[in-house]
Length: 277
Length: 293
Image (cartoon, rainbow over all chains, first blue to last red; front, side):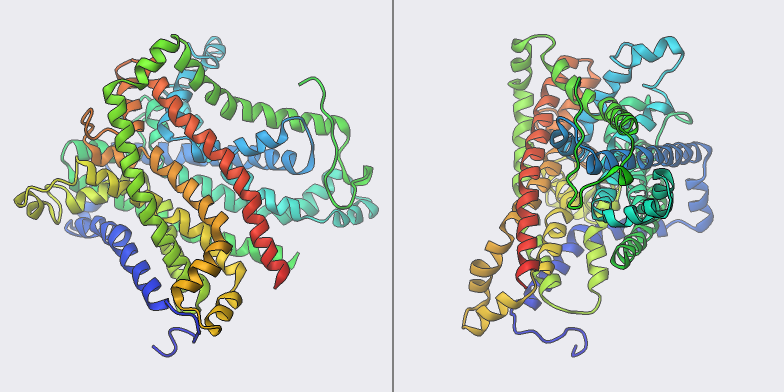
């Protein structure tokens, strides 16, 4: 124990840490372990067969494909929004800045029904796209739209503070040395914000693969076509196929934990990069 | 948007060397705002438009319907249990992590964040595996006539799970930035642990604490996926507000669905107002300490 904790005159360490560990174990760790223990009852071939049926594979393709596309969209537009909010002034900027966090604050079910009504064939935006032959609601495109909505704040909020900290002098020096604005952006600014951009992208992606509420309304939920993996877990639960639902959940959990690890590494990289700058 | 004035807030004024031509600035602002309009502002506006489309009477009838009121009540109950528990947890975790040095601290911080990377559906599923009829405690619970899954306790548990990290992750960096000097001085002057916490630490973290509570509250009231799995969707008894929205929507009762949804959208807007207000206070509180020490 002597090397576990450095000495401090402050009281309450044992109580605080003890309560923290107990609470975390009861609420998070023990229930999460239930998924792994339940799945361990399966043999490896049984597990593999359960998590690789054509319908499950189709749901992975949609979930990861749409999440990747949505996170990529958010990386591009999130960077642009962060840039505009940090560098330019326009009327209503403070309101716009505050509303960026709307997807964090708005319950996903509300986002889901609003986006569906908006992008359905008779919706405000849907009816403009329908003559062009573009259908969004009740297709995989709808999944992409919903996931773009819920992931929107991540890139903006990770890039914004880094962009604010870039010193004008650095850009001046680049300009003095003959760089034009685009060169300055590509060679000076972009490398500085790149770790933060990647972190935001990974956070948006990680959030998107687990998302349920905003997607199910707009997706149409057709097996093999527009059925996301979290919905498939619920479908299996409703059929009392607990083992099947849990096996798929374990696959999702392992992927989420790997992403969490990558995000932690990215954040560490981002902090290091900024400390050096 | 007829006039767009462009000025720079930077400490060092930007000159032609370090800013883009006017047309580029205009173009970038327009693209950014168009994207935000399509994906953020219009959906938000549509919630209120659809809610009020059929008139104020239909709106009030929808939100004062007995099932809607029962859903509001259950949402408030779940929130009133989940937020205080996660508040106590957040303070305990932040006290241990920010005020002491011990091994495995980074692992603990990662574990606290874990619920954020778990799909809400899986959060619900794991409680079914523990408390459901086929679960670990299922037979014992059935024997004693206790119901957790498809009942209110399950909803409360799922809500607690998805909101565990909110307050802790606000307090940890704030308390780390503030260090331990003031608390150490209080203890040296003879204050006990509780006195030190109430008189020194709490006033220093009050805005961060409130910020965490606001975010935790919004998520607790709005959680859908996790609660959906454990609720059983029993109208008037295990239906929270977001679940009630789903039921109305699936019954093609759009006006009522959007009316109830507008309550949640209003909650989101109020949350954002508080958040913006508190962000400045928290930054000040943090900055003050970095400045003083």
